[in-house]
Length: 138
Image 1 (cartoon, rainbow, N blue to C red):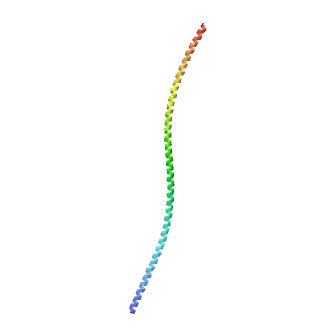
Image 2 (cartoon, rainbow, N blue to C red; image 1 turned 180 degrees about the horizontal axis):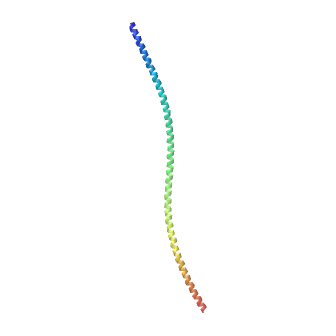
Image 3 (cartoon, helix red, strand yellow; image 1 turned 180 degrees about the vertical axis):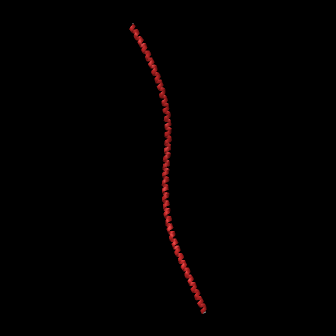
């Protein structure tokens, strides 16, 4: 029995040393997992910072989009105003052309009237001169 006991003791010692090795290995693995956990915490913090930055960028894009919408509305209003102004200018151009034509016609009529009136005055002067001569001859 002493042989069995000594073999059993050696077996237990050997198993105890193996278990100690396994325990040390588990401690090493636990330490490694703690390092990995710390790294994941750092990565999580970095992702939170990145998320905050993306939120800031998204907010800025929303501001820029709103600004572009306002600019687009203003440009649409300018285009509408420009179209209206072009229509008004075309209308004024047409009216100005008709007015110029009317002025030219009135100018022609005035010139004819002046010539006719001048001729009438000339005839009247000649007639008056003839009357004055007849009166003086009497």
